[in-house]
Image (cartoon, rainbow, N blue to C red; front, side):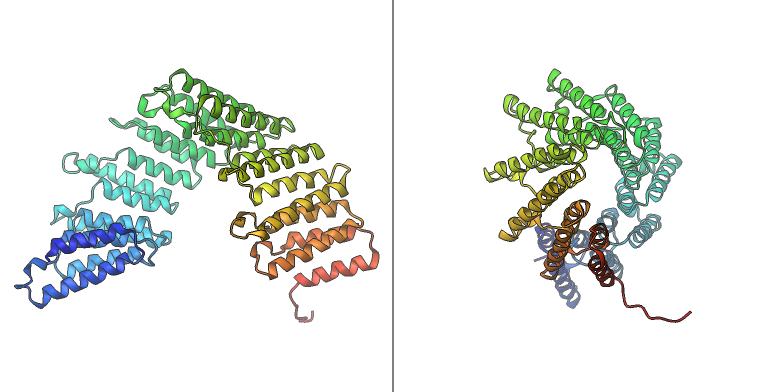
Length: 526
């Protein structure tokens, strides 16, 4: 075997995805170097080279589950120096990518890539093959972006532009491209700075021979969707969407564009957010149906319907919200069956969001009955073989929330009993098969809702609240970690005891719960 043979074997390990790939590669590299150094003349064909080490570094870069894999990739650079092997741009870029995609903390990773970048510039003074290029800076910017160091990411963009403008011929490979700008915008989007992301987009639009693409605009739209800008963010996002329709094909909106704007309206806090979301959905469907080739990227799918249903759920439009949400579900089913659009398939998120809309509608018992009806429908669809409509703890939690809300409408005892029944049903399913129904594991938040329903009822229902607390403590002691009672749990039961009219016994029970949660205090005097 020669160095080419070893490089090929190492490349196989790098592409294998095996968790121990990097360790195996290290052994191969060590054995090869030892053989070469034992007799450099006889084993001249085993002399290590840059390509070999770049392949080893790539293996470390891909082994992200291995602790300190990025650091070990960087250590290879020191190994190369000892053997007087000169890294090239690809070698350095691979190490930077390793740091960018590693789980290392922000400061450690960003400091490491900064150090490598400066080392590359230093080496390029005598070795042009080590000169940073646009891929280098994309990796460095990505490292900063992944760790929410948006301003640092932008500083690298500025550095690239200044280097390119200082010598457009020598630094032609440093001219920022759309991927560079998009990565910086994404950094601001992740940090919640929608206005900053938009400023980078504006800067991009002003650059000569540089046109933003759909990804560029979508990144800004998603930054507005993640922001807390309310109505202003929704209006600005919709303005950008309309602008995209006037641009070239590479900048036209797609389904992700519409979903981002609809999410903005969902978070806007306005009562007409549902109407706005539905209007956007209708516009998108009309465009797609008008020209299915030109507007292929606007083909309706589950994600966009779910976003509109969510907008209605958050709209605060009372009972109208879940009614509109259910109409959208019917539209989904109709478009799938009548037009054969298989990308539209109601899923667990669809049904859960409709149930949430009923829970927020304050529609009393009628809302709770509607929510329970949807839950039963989900079980029927799931039992018929559709795994995409499996109820989970959020499904049951929302139905329970509906009944808990009904407890404040005059049917306190009945509503609280129904909430408890839903909880019992969920627990029975979970306990019947903890693997199959792992996503129905009861949690503190859901159980607290049931306890609160009994607390609202007052009187003898307080005993039920105490009983559920005892069950909760028992489940937690048996290993169901999600059911650990919290401060809200104990406070709710104590408030129920205070309302119960139970006299001295209630006071004693309340004090006992208090003592459970108060650490022993040392009296240190006054």
